[in-house]
Every structure is written in structure tokens, then in C-alpha cells.
Length: 358
Ligand code: SF4
Ligand code: SF4
Image (cartoon, rainbow, N blue to C red; front, side, top):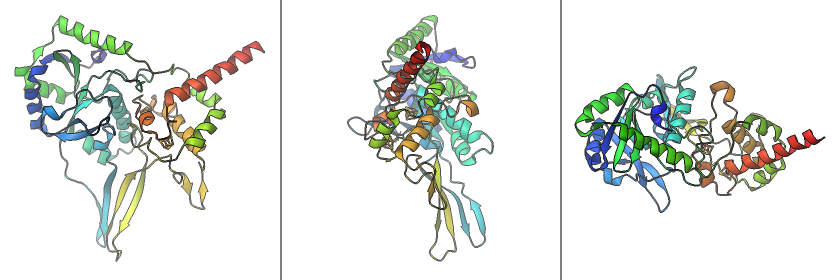
């Protein structure tokens, strides 16, 4: 499997890894480069980098996905004073985001759909347009299940994509901006040969065979709806802390709260949007002290449904891209989507088999 299986990928090149410093210099001429850097023994985060040496090329998943660049955890939408209301338009910094893996590219694709459909979100769109995204291949660890969710092969969301083929990178451009950058980098690139295409193909075949985690995702809606009252949800609910750690780390969670901050004399103020979590106790609480999802079980089931089939009709997509971040970040060890789905599938299959025997 290769990213070049998409029809609109236009050209392929190779770059010797020994020339990556020059490649980085060209990237840095476009804007501030952000890439995964090691921030603790076991964690990585996207940070501004000024040298290729700072980049953790082997990072599997960053703590937060790249959505934070386009949809920041807190942002001022409007300010007001006694003369009027003003839309906040912060100065844009052009961002070059290096090393986005296929699952996170799929996540960006979903966020693009959500923020651009209907009344497009101008704040998100402006940030997205002021960016150049460079995809990068990766090998799965024991938590990755993007293959099950169909997001293991980058289809969109990047300008150029780099596949690690040992001593070289195999580079594909997807967008006009990607083509322009490739033209700029021509002196250090070589056109990909048949042999290079074979090496690229070999990488993706090897990677495809390396997944150890996953499930059959063809019947998720039937399974989830048929197992809505499964006792497993009660067990999970008892252990869930409603801490909300599973949502900010998710590449496709986008719920926010609006917070108004007024000056002490009430003459001026601002309205911010801040990331929220459907796992928080009061997320679905409304006027009159009524809570639509009062228990952890209600909230967990809502989240799982949203991730696994709730968007099928609206967007012809699932909003889980199989990155494994929620599993890694859950302090109670319960947010293992693969284990939960497999348990529900076993129960569902047993019911089907009992029905057939009756
Ligand atoms: S639900 Fe979990 S595994 Fe799926 S995309 Fe979100 S964080 Fe990743
Ligand atoms: S991270 Fe785990 S404990 Fe925290 S809200 Fe999510 S499922 Fe519950």
C-alpha cells in the first residue's frame, strides 16, 4: 500500500537522508517549522524547531495531535467595548508542520470537513490556509489500529509526504503548494526511479503486515446498537474518572465551550472558545439543572458511538482514526477501544449464534 495510490498525487522524488539538513533549510524559509520532539522519557510533542537535529523522526504519537495548530485549546473569538463588537483576527504565523503521520492526516481531513461545512469556521480555515503540512511514514506500535479504521494510508491533508526508504526519503507532492516546494527543492532531489517505487512499495507492504492491534470494523454500527445495554458499559463506567483526558488528545474531538470574560466595570470584555470534553460531568447539563448524560456510563457510550459510527451518515466517515492516544492517556486503563469493540463483537456474535440455534 502506498500514499501514491491516490490518483491526484502528481510526482515522486527521492532525497538522500544525508541531504535532509538542506531540505530543512528550505522548509524553514517558508515559516516556523514545527515537528515532534522528545519531551520526556516516553512522550513527544509538536514544538517549534530550528534544526533538523531537534526532530524525533521515530516518534509514534505526539501527546496532542496537530489539530492544536488550527483549533487551539483557547482562542479569543470576539472582543467588545461600549462602542461595538469586534471579531478578533490575530496575526497569522505561517506554520510548516513536519512529520504528520497517516492517522493524524486522516484526523485533519475530518476536522477540515467539520470546520468547513455549512457556515465555515473562519478562525480554523485561516489557520489551516497559513500552513504547509508534511506527512511522514511511521511503523505501528501495540496501540495503533489505524489499519482497522481505514486511515493507515494518507489520502489527503498534506502538501508533501515523505516515506522512509532506508537511506532515502521517497517524496510525493499532493497540492499546488507541494509542487511549488518540490520545484524549489529540485537541486537536492532526484526523480524517483522504478527501483525507488519498488522500495516505497516494499515499505508500505512491510508496514501493513506489522500491525498487531485491531478489529474488523465492517459491522460497528450493528454491534454498537445491538450491545447498547451490554454490562461491559457498567464496568467501564464504574472505573471512569470523568477526567476528560481522552478527548483533548483525540485528533477529531472538537467540542468547545464559550467563555465570556468581562472587565470589572463591565465596559469591555472578550469571548473565548476553549476545548471542552463530553466526558466532563456537566457537559450535557442544561438550564433547570437537568443533565442529559448524568453518569459516566452515559458519557462513555455517547463518546464511543460518536467515534465509531455516529458520523457515518453525516460525513460518510468514522471519527476514530485509530491513533491510540485515548488508550495511552486514560489513567484508569479503560479507554482501550480495540478491547471494548472486540468484547462487544464477541457478545454480538454469541447472540447471533443463539438466535440461529433457536
Ligand atoms: S478515539 Fe482514541 S484512538 Fe480513535 S482517533 Fe480518538 S484518540 Fe485516537
Ligand atoms: S480518560 Fe479514561 S477515566 Fe478519563 S474520562 Fe476518558 S475514559 Fe474516563
